[in-house]
Amino acid sequence: MTVISQRIRSRARDLGGFGVRRVLPAAEAQMVGPFVFVDHMGPERLPAGGGVDVRPHPHIGLATVTFLFEGELVHRDSLGTVQRIRPGDVNWMVAGRGIAHSERTPEELRPAGPVLHGMQTWVALPKAHEATEPSFAHHPASTIPVIERRGARIHVIAGRAFGERSPVAVFSDTLYAAVELQAGAALELPPEHEERGAYVVAGEVAVGGENLAPGELAVLAPVAAIPVCARERSTLMLLGGARMDGPRFIWWNFVASSREAIERAKADWRAGRFAPVPGETEGIPLPEA
Image 1 (cartoon, rainbow, N blue to C red):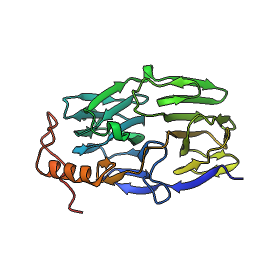
Image 2 (cartoon, rainbow, N blue to C red):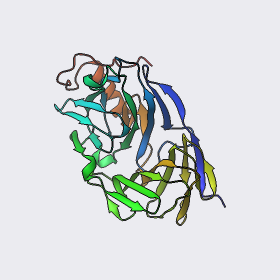
Image 3 (cartoon, helix red, strand yellow):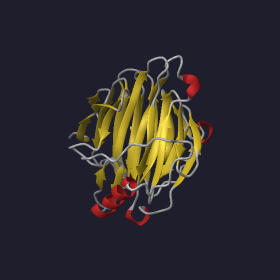
Image 4 (cartoon, rainbow, N blue to C red):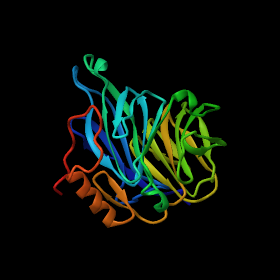
């Protein structure tokens, strides 16, 4: 019997000159645990003098999680936060009732043509916390638990995994980890989370004996421990956790358990009622459709 209940192939998206692979949401699954949005950014080298310029935009009802393999970004938000993120760090921004932020390549990295490779994910907030006060937390790489196994190195980004817990203050049981595997290395995924997924960033792995290629997400059946074996040097993301307390509406950058909350957020951004991002003079307008 297969241990993969759904196999999702990421889709290429262009975000204004920078390429990503959109993993979730997908036709096959809206969420895996609390993860309602997953983008694999790059790897990509941008033209000399260029960079990533994600202008200020709003969020509600979610927490954003940024984790980089290569490159750097500067995060600014409407709370007044200015924070550089480097490989191995974790940026955790809770939108709650509403926040706006931007992400840009640092100026000094632009002349040479910056490289960027990482994961941008959104975690849906439980209904009881959807309207919580917005907040931001930065966790340097030195504070993120790293587990060494034979041929495997595991970074516990958020939640808990393999007996370790991340310092990130999650709102529900969460699994989020980056796993580096040497060729031939094997690892067992324990059945400690209600929902589990494995996304291949690079390389090729077999999950329960079934091969996964780069850019594929396997949503795993709720069975006992599942073996993972690297066919070659590989990197994968483990994500999941407790099943969310109901489906979510997703429109542009807004996530909510009700359509009414989405409509309020649309009206607030259109009318300029979100707090501005200090130091920014631009903004992404509300889409017409």
